[in-house]
Image (cartoon, rainbow, N blue to C red; front, side):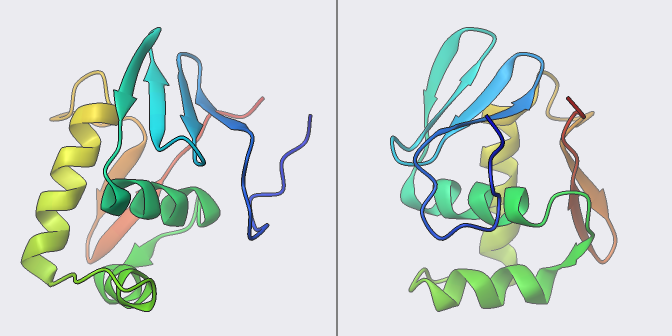
Length: 113
């Protein structure tokens, strides 16, 4: 099934990597067979990165998106949210494979299928 990453409603499973999938409607990811629940903020943040996969996005762009969705987000808070999201996404959060820091922003990489 081909998924339109830019659609407003994402109800299906999104395969992010070999052993990682994102379930937007359910607010969870499945990593290596384990379910990891996401907070509302983490869910919205991951959706933003998936919609902008392969593109470097600035801190300001991310904060603007979060505020557009009525989620308070300062730059310092954003770093905390990203750190928490990495702990759920990455096998080794200190050496990320998906959510990469590219100053002055981030890039989300997904495996090609």
